Image (cartoon, rainbow, N blue to C red; front, side, top):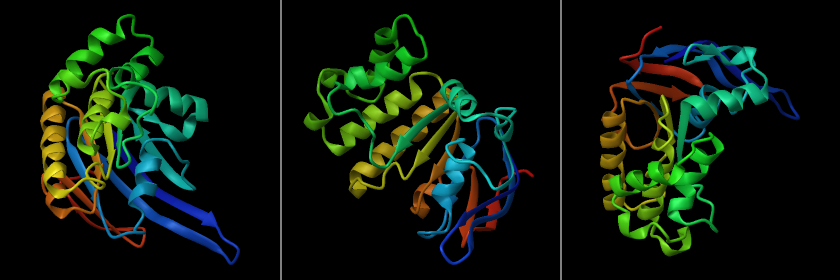
Length: 225
């Protein structure tokens, strides 16, 4: 589902070029779960952005669901993301003026689904929010907002789910509940999961692990080349 070959990311600074990622290579099978771990500044979020086509590599290649991202324009990458990927962020990224139901319906509407409400409602029920459909994010707790974000990510049926510190802004008890829900939904949907986290306990629940330090891959478990 994901293949990475000699991936490098360099940015220009006032003093010199700064290499954020050094020659990363690996592959992830369809339906597998991958944890990307490392300390702050190790390159985790940069790697996630490159895998999702949100950023462009300086060298090397990312192949997503059989499509080389380097061959696509920015619009082409956005179109591919819309067809294949879902996202869950630490900060939830819900639209504040939309209800929970409307937030989940939005990507379905953008994808051209004729009856987005019929898809969105069952997903909100799956995450335990059947009674909160018409509440806006301001009326929901952090855990409830992340449940909405999970429903929004899974509702379009993505092949790959990218999760960037999905429990990072939650207390430990709520974070554990959200993690359980994430892995449960992911297993049921058969989605390939790419999870960026600093939480070693959360990372240990994934089938594969990739550890970064100063932009270099220093450990990998369960990954192909």
